[in-house]
Image 1: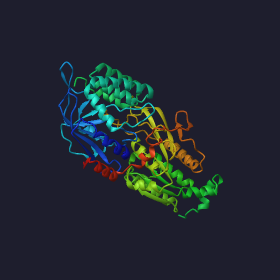
Image 2: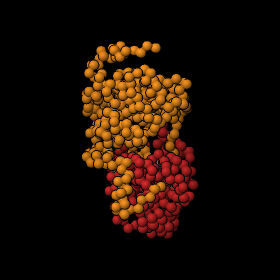
Image 3: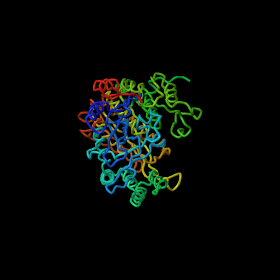
Image 4: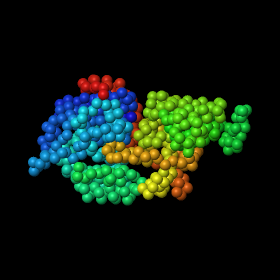
Length: 223
Length: 289
């Protein structure tokens, strides 16, 4: 159940950005979630990212503007980051959009429910949602695109800052999701010991929540 | 079987409910969204108190594993729609009752239409997202939502029958001018958008817990009708201490569901055509999936 007023206010503002060639709004058949996604064609990332342009599809979550903001970008190519020492790595947090993820997220995103012919090289990048200390305050689409750009400019620094943010949210709210997200980011950064230590701590604090132990069992750090 | 006349049926109720209140109760139109363990107990209790006008909504059919708390159903009703089982039960017991059964999942235009013509909405949904959506629709039509929730937190790491770490339930009352479910403590923070493994195991459930929460919700409903409950908007039941506590929570003024500027946002839901027209006017290309 999307907030159409928020979308109406925000989407035209994206046109003012000069980081892409063209914008398209993808409508859905679901009357309560009328916008499936917004696509930015010919998105030009910072120089440290390869390829030098790609399309970005931003799925709009079902409770957009009420209790959800945009957090995920779908890109039509695997992205690489070249660090200052000229070494090129797969961009952290850039994962292939697989069947399991699509199935699991269909209840949250009308785009994943309605679209069936996803290209095989589609990847997704999930960024930690921003939460205002006063409670949920909606983060507009434009800010997500700006954050996405910031992430691409220096992904390692961005994710390290995210860890600090997640830890402060964990301390404030005691919501296990922030522990999961911290572990998730540590995984993205390849920090094996830190990931293991967070998951073990989480299992101790939340013995009834199976996701932590499942994650530890299925996690393969060297892959 | 001889039908029981209303005077006899309500005789004991009328020893504590005034005839005027009983008459009011009979007229109240309830839209009950979700007919699981809490929903069915709520409906049965409400009907026995005197509520006579129900719209009941649930897409599911009865599973054999529901029988531990679906006291009105017989084993031969397994695989029948839950709404139909409840409707059949209510009509057989209360001939003058009006029951509209909608075998669909929320959100759905038929259910939204039923909410728009109801007086009070009763939410008995399992998941956070449809709960929030029901709250948005209730607020759009200026209806009070009484939301029921109950459950167990079980540590089953040691075996299939685990230790109960916590159990209980809550009744959240979201009035049109009061806090939304989110401000009443519904934690949607971080429940979505993760690619982590989710736990799809069935939840522990108990008829006794459903009985406590379902019956307490009917008491809350009656208090709401006679306006005796406000400003209380959350009632918590803790199974370990067998205690019931009340809270009067305040909203976040910046909340997009119940804050100062929320009305325009709430009213914008499902406005696809005007959204399309707006984008067209701005020269923004729209296409379908």
